[in-house]
Length: 312
Ligand SMILES: NC(=O)c1ccc[n+]([C@@H]2O[C@H](COP(=O)([O-])OP(=O)(O)OC[C@H]3O[C@@H](n4cnc5c(N)ncnc54)[C@H](OP(=O)(O)O)[C@@H]3O)[C@@H](O)[C@H]2O)c1
Image (cartoon, rainbow, N blue to C red; front, side, top):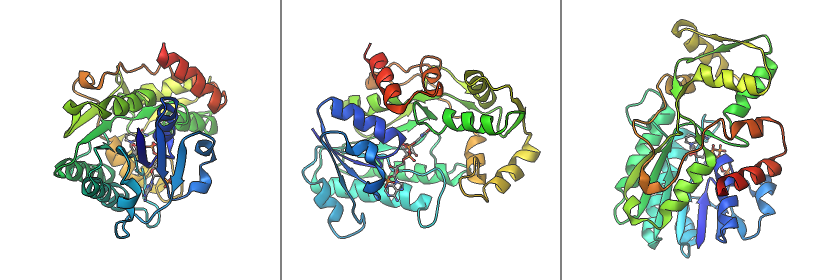
C-alpha cells in the first residue's frame, strides 16, 4: 500500500514507519524539516515532502494517489507559531478535508486519552475538538486513537524521568504523584493503527488505548529509579506546591513540566475497559519492555530486540 504520514518523524512515527516498511509498504512522510530526520532517510521505500498545508490544493496533490493517510502531528507544548490550535486542530481538519476531497480510502487520526473540549488543559481541549471534527467529517473512512502515555525506546516518559533522576540523585520532587497512568507500548499502538486499516468495523470510531496495568506516577518514577539504580528520594508535592512549581518551570524552554501539563496530569489517564478486541492487539507490560531500553543500548539494537520480541 501507499501510505502518507504527517507527524511521522517523531517517536510514534519512527516506530510505525519501521514496521510499515518491514511489511513492504511505500511511505511518504510530510515533514517541516526533512534535513533533521536522517534516521528515516536510510530506510528503503520512504520519501519526504515539505509543503504548505494551507496552500490551495497542495495537500490534495500530495495525497491524491495514496491508499491511507495517517495523522500523528502533535505537540506537548506550544512554541512560537506552533500552537495547539494550529497543530491539533487546523492541521487535523485540513488533513480530513483534503482526504475527503480526493477520495482517499482511509484516514487514521491520533488523538489522546481524555481528549475533551471541556478538559482542564488546552492540550486535551484542542485534541478533543480535533477528534470531534475529524470524526464528524462526512464521507470519510476515519478511525481515531486515544492512547494513555506511550512508552518504548526513545519515549519522552521513562527516558525523561531517567534523565531527571540522574540530574537529581538525592531527592526528586514530583507533581501529581498520585495520578494514575496505564502506559501502552508504542509497538501496540502502531499495531492498532495497522490492524485497523483494512477493518471497516473500525470506521467512524475512536479507540482508547491503555496498557494491561495502571500505576500511580510515583510508582512509575520509582520503577524508573530501580531500573537505573537511582536512590533518589521521591518527594510527592502537594496541590499547594505543585501548581506554582509547574508555573515556574514552564517559564524555561524545554521545561520538564508546564502549567498546561500540570492541568492534564491532574486527571487519571486510564481506560475504563480493556483495549477493544476489534484492534486485535495484546498490550505488553512495562516490565517486559522498559528494562531493555533503559539499559543504555543503542537505538537500532533496542528496536531489533523489541521487533523480535513482538513477533514471538
Ligand atoms: N507520546 C505519547 O505518550 C503520546 C500519548 C498520547 C498521544 N500522543 C500523540 O501521538 C502523536 C505522536 O506523538 P509522538 O510522541 O510521536 O510526538 P513527537 O515525537 O513529538 O512527534 C510529533 C510530530 O508532530 C509533527 N508536527 C509538529 N508540529 C507540526 C506542524 N505544525 N505541522 C505538521 N506536523 C507537525 C512533527 O513533525 P516534523 O517536525 O517532522 O514536521 C513530529 O513528527 C501526537 O499527536 C501526540 O499528541 C502521544
